Amino acid sequence: MKQNTSAEKATSTTKYYIIAWVFGLLFYFLDYFARSAPAVMIPELSSLFEIDRVGVVAIIGTYYFTYSTCSLVAGIAFDKFGAKYSMFTGCLILGLGCLLFIVASQFTGNTGRLLQGAGCAFAFPGCVYLASKGFSARSLATAIGFTQCLGMLGGSAGQFLVGPWIANGMTINFFWIVTGIAIILVAIGLLIITPQAHASPIPADQEKQSGFLNPYKIVFSNSQSWLSGIISGLLFAPTTIFAMTWGVAFFQTDRSLTFQEATIACAMVPMGWVFGCPLLGFITDYLGKRKSVLIAGAILMALSLAQLLFLPTLYPPYVSTFILGLGSGAAMIPYSIIKESNPDHVKGSATGAINFITFGVTTLLSPIFSTLFGKTLLTATNKDLHFQSAGLFWIGGIALAIIVSLFLKETGKGAPVK
Image: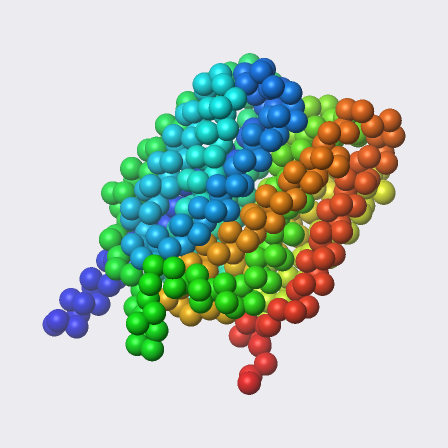
């Protein structure tokens, strides 16, 4: 009888974790929605903050400073305190950051964007944490891929829907107020529904070393963690920096697309993620291979960019960018690899660590790209050459990711038996 009661209690708790995961998906959807939306309102934000477009892009880019650093805080929070208060806090911070965007000040713009990055750092690790509690470990990559799919759907909506809304007269103040309130409501839902969990059990041989930062000592001392983060960062950067930040401006200026055409082209990148993340996650689970699927996705990214640069009339830009997004779903595979390369009791910290490294790469590359190509966007005389040079910058990064992937150890079920 007691066994049945225990089993029923476990089943009930699992059910609540699944419901909390659904709220986490809403958090992650709104994370990407708020992350990508500024790309289609750069002129309006420029007018609001009274700075030029490069200055606006600089504000948008500050997101990654706090996103990468707070990913480490998020990882420890989930390992030490569970998801209930960690997810609520992150979601609340994101909502407040969105509300600050309505104040006509460069300072509040920077502050709001920094808060958005800090809050969003809790979204994906939290979803992975909740999924690991509510679902079987046999479908890890598929679950992570589906989670990322919802986030990318938010990223697509942040451009595909918001662009026309702004063009049709919606004020950016109204947009940020509604978005901020919606996020705060999700935060309250997370607080109510998420079970309170204890920290993951620590193996006896490591119990004496269970200091606050010890999980990161374990994760960062593992070379596979660094390789996973660098690869993921190099594959995410062409989509997060180019498509979701600079893309609309580049397509309008260098390729003479209308605002609507440029917005659709850029929105198709996260739409490609919507299909690519779960698809590639399913394939890597089915084959039991991580590296081969990862490299294949990176090659598809490089080929789609090359076609967009040098054979632009082969098919419309939105098809090219969709394929780019489809291939970039491979950037999620290292999230499975780092989890499988580290002990279970540091899985939250492992996710925080790869977010830190991934978006640390993005933080480093963003000002480099802005300096080399963003500042010359309006002054370049040869528009085709300027667009091609910008694209080759990202193809070089993808090629580097493929090379680094060769040094990864296979962690899937098809890995060689030692």
